[in-house]
Image 1: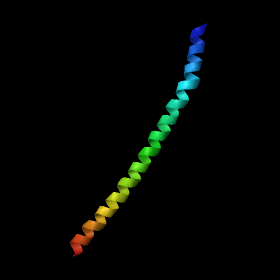
Image 2: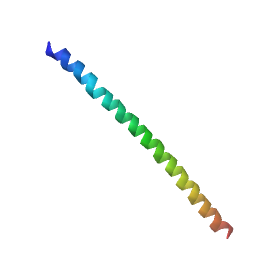
Image 3: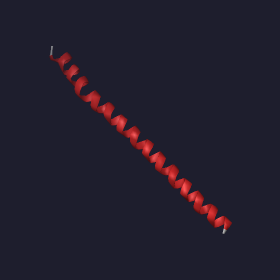
Image 4: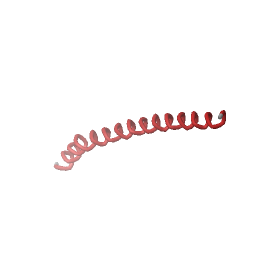
Length: 53
């Protein structure tokens, strides 16, 4: 009898935290990709200025 109750409690407590963690990881990855794109753009500008000058 306690086994189904344990499973339900596990599902109600652990699963939402797991889903929130996945959401935070996804947001962090999007931020990292945006920062990498910006740094690549700045490095390309520096490289173009050195080629011209």
